[in-house]
Amino acid sequence: MEIYHKHSWKVSTEEAKRIQLELKSHLDFHFKIDPSRNQIIAAADISYNRNDDNLFAVVVLLSYPDLDVIGEYTHRCKAQFPYIPGFLSFREIPPLLEIFNNIQNPPNIILCDGQGIAHPRGFGLASHLGLLLETPAIGCAKSLLVGDYQNLASSKGSTSPLKYQNRTVGMAIRTREGVKPVFVSVGHKIRLQEAVKIVLRCSPKYRIPAPLRISHRKVNDLRKIFGRD
DNA sequence: GCGACAG
DNA sequence: ATCTTGTCGC
Image 1 (cartoon, protein in one colour):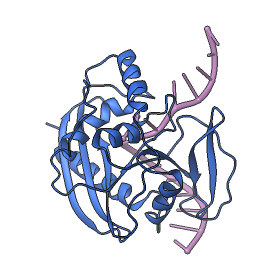
Image 2 (cartoon, protein in one colour; image 1 turned 90 degrees about the vertical axis):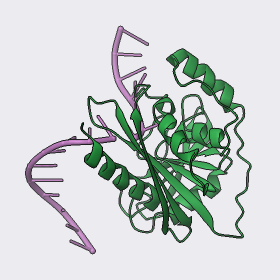
Image 3 (cartoon, rainbow, N blue to C red; image 1 turned 135 degrees about the vertical axis):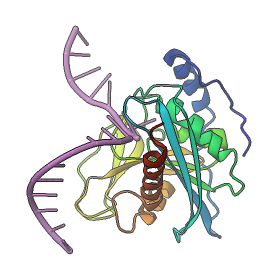
Image 4 (cartoon, chains in turn yellow, green, blue; image 1 turned 90 degrees about the horizontal axis):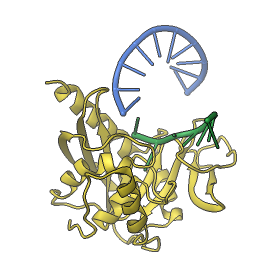
């Protein structure tokens, strides 16, 4: 997977903000995923201990829509950027890029644990990763960064538009009866309607979509094994 | 100045 | 993000 929009990761928040605003103009929300054949969906996650700058990264590959695990890749490194709301990608993308750049079987879709364009500057983790890899990317967050939404029915599959500054930037989705919704927003090269459909299809049983759920378990296993040294 | 704040 | 204890429900 080639990188075109490459930039430094060792930046100040002001520089990071400028990078986000510049890269945002290159996002494409009209790409259509080929529905004629099965896809490979990737889920990426990061784990780390408190007071420890070791980052553990995992990317899991699954067939879609069957959701069979067909690959697993890991990477470990030192965090080069702190966690700052609105700048999560500068902390988490470097180790994920290390993995994606070495995957021989690149995915058609990337599921990210965080926001896409439902972000203060419209450029969250899923947008950043999707653009750098020129791959359709979906942001699926467990909580909100920006925006508001109306109450949704308690039944599985219920949705409510996520609004931010008079714009629909995502969708609150009930992926399981009676649980809190997840917040889906497009990252890059995908439409919201398609992103919603994919997330629901990836959530046959639990609140968290299977790919993200699996990657989260894998990355925690990795951290527990190599966490201290 | 105050409150909000992905992971 | 991670840690902890208890509780509710299939």
